[in-house]
Image (cartoon, rainbow over all chains, first blue to last red; front, side, top):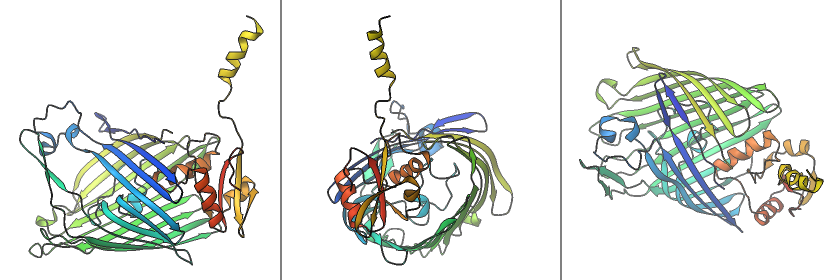
Length: 316
Length: 100
């Protein structure tokens, strides 16, 4: 199976980019499942001159990654107990559904991967309990990082930290015209270098007739006591789906996205974003989005506004 | 053009994988065939075969979401085993697949 995403981004009517392509490979054998996902996201061209001007100068065509996003073996013992061993996404609402065909907006909320980390390399247990409860529990460590030299050469830094722990408990319920899921998350990221953090989070995913509401909140104290800071973020996306033709759906959506990092100088990293857009799915496998995004700094001044358009397609 | 020359053209034009979709439910431990409406009302669905273009659009959309979350069970034997192990669950497949 090889789903591929192709996404064009048109910013201020002058920039078009290939944002993301993912290849997902899956094989089931008896009670075992093997998954590998290779992702190209905003990645530099292979033939790039390697002059080292990439992320350092913000050149948009040299910032990104080619990564193995997920690669794990899963043993499915029972509805209530399954084990994954390998590299997987942290099971937050946005992370689990972050693909352009699934999320409403084009813009990723600021808190994603900045409070709870993006990926876990280790062990994850998950399953369904009675009464609509579902759990995830994980332990593992972060990825090794890398540095880029002046000549563009990459040096892997083996700075893996002690094992971290995390858990998520979700309650799901279906009712006559929809469904609701609410979840609480907690984690402990041990970090001997910059200090440990213990984020807490809440999520809600509500479907009511044609309305869809997603909301996430997460917060943690900064690991380094010298910084005496707190990182927190919240977003909510509200949309309403209209039928268009025999298969199509047109969904106007609105997103409020706030993020604050009080350890940075004068709240320089605090900002509020507001997105208003249209998400059109002519068929199940395609999505076109038009989005107006306005970003405000902590003092209320407008930092930027922009109109973007994206296309996503799922090949199979 | 001879009629016999039209045959390859007709074969090319015909859908290569046209087939019906059958729906199944584990009803109290026994797997039975159900209709699409009963399938869509099922609380617990085992999604699979997202590449099957015969799937109704609404089911294909949900199957695609499940595939991206790595929640699909594509292997026929594994799907059958999972269905039989989970009372109240539903799945689907082609008529050629043995799921019940």
